[in-house]
Image (cartoon, rainbow, N blue to C red; front, side, top):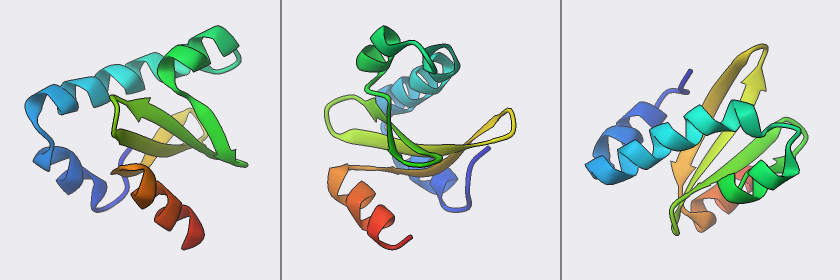
Length: 88
């Protein structure tokens, strides 16, 4: 599931970054509770219920869990992630 506005951000990404985002989100469910996979995915909890996955060198995906769904809140760089977290 994607929060409003995130779909438009995703659509503006180059094709190779879109593929990287999709691949990262496919791998995330396997990574929870498996620290060695966390490292490879760049998966970490930023706050209770808010997680970040690295997608390449500059792009970050912020997401949370709602039941069995991963909900994407933001696609952006490190500075955009920090601004997002400060605004919440």
